[in-house]
Picture 1 (tube, protein in one colour):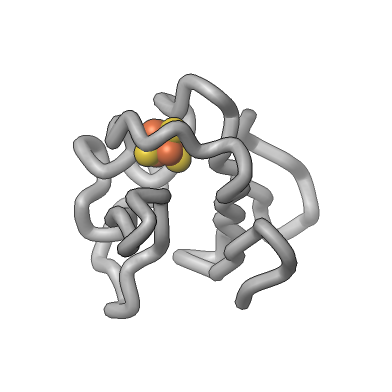
Picture 2: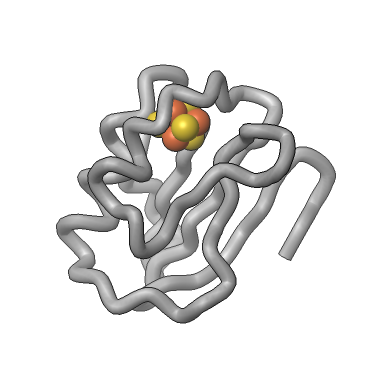
Length: 83
Ligand code: SF4
């Protein structure tokens, strides 16, 4: 789902939101979770189309390593886990 500069998708019961306006293209998230994140044609973080096979902990780690807090994780109860 795309909402303005945000791209949102649900993975393993977690909502992952990418704030494309903040991403500075370091690639950190992709190093930790290449199953989920990739660069789009503008070299901004995007979510891969294919349904990822990834553990929740690895997914949260991948979002935590973003240096500009462009990756937001919200659990099934609406609690924000990252950043
Ligand atoms: S870690 Fe953050 S800044 Fe780096 S590519 Fe991923 S979303 Fe963009």
